[in-house]
Amino acid sequence: MMMHGETVNVTWRVPTGEVDGGNSPIYESESESVDDVLVKPGTGSNATDSIRPDGVTVTLMLAFPRIWEYRSLKGALVTVRGHDYRVIGDPLPVDGGMKPTRWNLLVELTDTGG
View 1: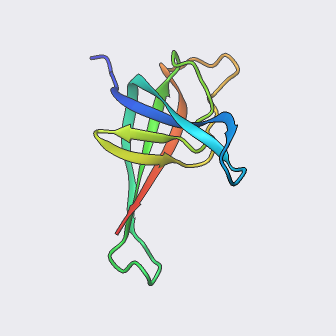
View 2 (view 1 turned 45 degrees about the vertical axis):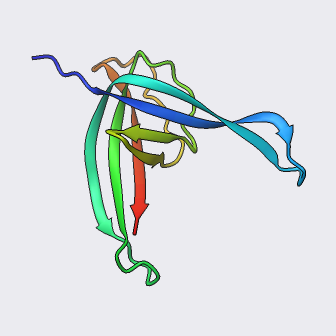
């Protein structure tokens, strides 16, 4: 039986090159669907700060397919099963000719609620 992932949507904030009245950059959203992404539930935990006693933090680990044309995911939003998560850090693909699987980019996501 061959493993196959699911489709997720990645959204980046891209600067337009223009600035607003306060001289801050203006951004627009750019999205892409990525097929065959493996989704692994991460750890969930209760938020520990006192101002959010009912808060929780959820994480997921994604494995992006090798055929996806890499671009930085720093600051990106990834929609998995209808829920939005933020990318942690700026993950880089495994390189150097190693091809043991169809997936070569591990991406950790997080979302906090409450």
